Image (cartoon, rainbow, N blue to C red):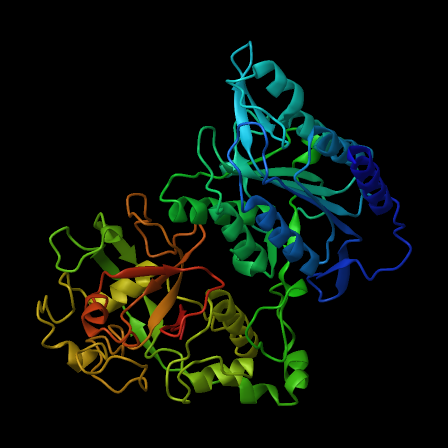
Length: 553
């Protein structure tokens, strides 16, 4: 039986590597050049997915490992990969897989992904160096039988050597297990969040955690990886996900969901010829769940005005909505809240001084009528032309802004930075609200729909009292996306009004109160000037919209 498994694996791998690039292009992964022309990113995409659940020699059973591997295999097939799966292999079967891979999978225009879900272990060798291993079903505990363990377990250095020998352009190795000494040092400071290095080779590694970290059988890493493959890891909203972006997304989300018990690791082969590129997933190969506009921008490139108007059979000028802006004078303010502030959250500190240049901020939130004029559809849960648009992700907001700038050039529409947003909200005050601390929220209903008796939906924009600078609904209608990455501590925040873009993390900032949640007490607390929230760039919420900013009138 074991011999039959080995023969089958060898046949499957050799059949993948034997596919001719000239057969047809139905397996090709298509991207788009800056000029708008389609181009082939990869001719073929191969993956080998392994899950090990039923360990037989002292290790805990991992009831979900094979299920997790199946879910990854299905996600990769949806993204155009030819996938071979292997479940509960012994050493001979696992070595057969690796040997077949080492003898060639794909060509220089292809990509290859290797996924392993099972137990991993770290062993210190005679020289005091840590060596990582992945384990087949019969591997014993190293403390019980070290010699047998070293005979059966698969060293990560062998897998790294195979990665270096591959002829494919890009190879990504993902391990839902924890170990160290994988010869691939963590490399969080050398991440690229764009597709500029597509043509260069890459050999990249991601693991679920560090040495001695216990990975739960119900894998948090697997859940987050599936979310990433579903498009959540497009952190710069360019229509593509790189392995670098996926590693950042996994790091932030796994650490958060595991309560800091798991710390995913990322690295690349240090061979100079294999570390300049980045494995890439085009978003457009796997459509989102909600309906999209009739004209799409899969790689973030804008269309010409003529293309845009022809795609919906309307003249260009009919797309330009009327948008009112308020001038916000420049100045310096103290951002954040003091520890003594009622209703405060920890991410609102430490307080720090920020200098903001003059700019213009939209007088109200973007309305559904304005969104429809530019995008051609209405994604909102609460539908009415004069209600704020919601259920728009940060990525979709950026697409709206790109189109608006094309239709109305020279205005440089954008999202406000978080500092600009709070500065405009505070209006030169340092209290909980511009009208004072208001501990019992007596005046909230004058300025905000978050007051008692009003919560539970969105409301027409611009109906309540504006703040002293003429801005409506800053304290409660829908919350609003900002440009910045969300960092949970202001310790190293910029001291100018620019968006906080480094280091890259996986959530964008959301500011302002919301009236949509039915519990008014929580809505009221969140209406404070300093309140902060966050969301994945691809996430949609029925209580989050946005307002525009620009530097010139």
